Length: 78
Image: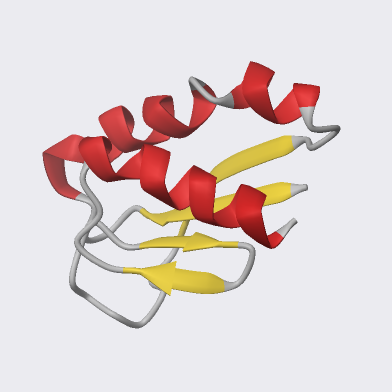
C-alpha cells in the first residue's frame, strides 16, 4: 500500500495538482499489487509546503513534477 498524506495548511495552490499527480499512478500501482490511499491531513510539522508524507517518509516543497520520482522511489523499496 502507498499511503500519501498531504498537509492542508501549507500545501498552497499546488495541493490539488499534487494529489492528482499521485492518483495518476493508481493503475500503475495496481499492476504492482499496491493500493493507493491519498488523504489531506493536518500539520505534518515541517511547514515547508507543500509537505507530503508517503508511507511515513516526509517530503517537503513537493511540486507536481516531483510526484513521479516519489512514486518510483517507493516502488523500488517494494
